[in-house]
Amino acid sequence: MVRLFVALALPPELRTQLSMLAGGIQGARWVPPENYHLTLRFIGEVEGWRADEVDEALSSIRAKPFELCLRGVGTFEKGGKIGALWVGVERSDGLTHLQSKVETALQRMGLDPERRRFAPHVTLARTDKAPAGKLVEWVQAHNLFRAPAVAMEHFTLFSSRLGKENPVYVPEVEYELA
Image 1 (cartoon, helix red, strand yellow):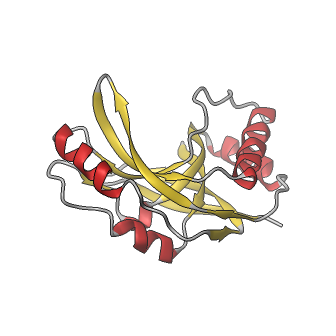
Image 2: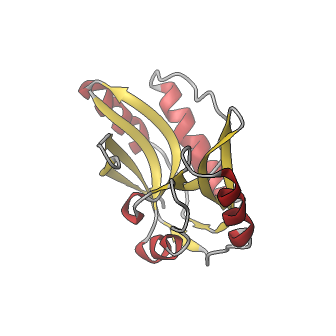
């Protein structure tokens, strides 16, 4: 069994810029910069043969390169508790089109539809043990964040191994946008 997800890998200069936002909140588990990505579709645990089918389905996707612009910050809450800090993504027809193509390709090969609405973001920290007041202050201090647009010229199928500290994400296959 292998744990898979489809994402946009972020270029080093953008990861560096995001890493400058990290820190200063006791109890927050900050995502290491090498793990920053924008998930297009979480797949989960699949058998090896199924992973081959996923690769085949993703290989058939045709979409054009587009610009990605990260902008603003926010939180995800569950049960009234802030569970994550994230950086948002400016609306983009190219991103929406690519995510839709990925979802359609994976459904055609037999995966169940994604239950959650696509909310593009880059997770910066897991915050279930951090004081809510500090998280609100962090959001207020960084809510005007905006990164220069970067060209997205491929998307990636990642495998993920859960570890004690942080998961290990391995880029398995890159698919060119042309």
